[in-house]
Length: 407
Image (tube, rainbow, N blue to C red; front, side, top):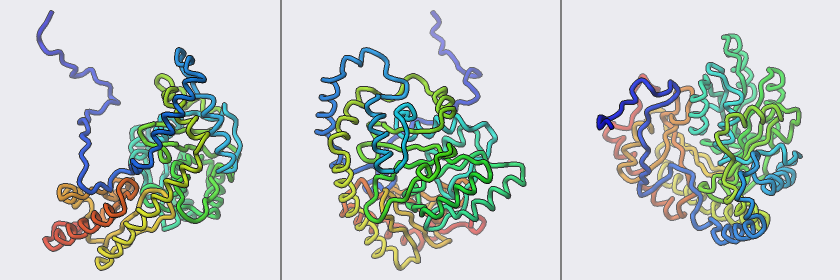
């Protein structure tokens, strides 16, 4: 037996990437990741739900789960979609996934060839942006304002890309409490975007994972609600109302897209064991729990918005005041380099995500995403105060200014 170390040089697949193992390090004030409040995770309810599910169907764990996911959970999704989003599907049209990330990834792979052009918002969730790039897509962001995608600008972009021989394959969008900007597309814009999508034969991948997190105002109809032609592929999640660690989301798409998407699934769906806890708890107290977590989040959002007004108002900054979701989008003056400042702030105790992380078009250096959901209101206030003092100190030293060539 040889004791020499075996070398894999030349044996790795061309698709693999030599990435370092991520180390999860949290600064004192962590506004980077959209964690829910740990106090709102319904641990007792989930345990009771698991016991009830196992008592009824626990012997089914001896078999591999249904390829579409636990039937009872898919039936709950059908009921929820009709009640909350106003469109009807059957349980066979619902696929349970390991969070909305897997749902998006399966649909992305079903629709994307290397070299395809895909349109997203000008700033888009980093996880999906990475998935699109991993699939070999040419990702192009369409302009936004405080109400989300601007339909006229979207159509202009489609025409320009088509003229360049890069006709867009589909549009990926988070229309409700968009990540990272927090914007919500009004119904009138959704209707115009659907008209544009049909005119250019361009499907829509709608990621509705934040829709339950509305703390004020009226929920807008989903793209899927407004159009049942099959042009809309719909993704949503339970992670944001329960816990990310449960890894439960779902999608509903046309039958031929579903078959192609499932061809990329490795192994079965999410844990049937966990699905018992999720479905039994949600059947009992879904809407009471949603109301509770949104009351908690309202106080945290208000604390962060108030602190931004107190500490950033004099800097010429702007920020959103979202009606729900988990994010506040901070826009600093053009000469503030939030990308360069990000590691400095992290070391000094405040974490945030620089806008450039979300920018397929390569802009965003003067923006930052702040997550307000996980900490307490006081934590948000104190963290924003510290962030402002760090930025002011760095600006006085000239270390947070955007280089002229990057503006």
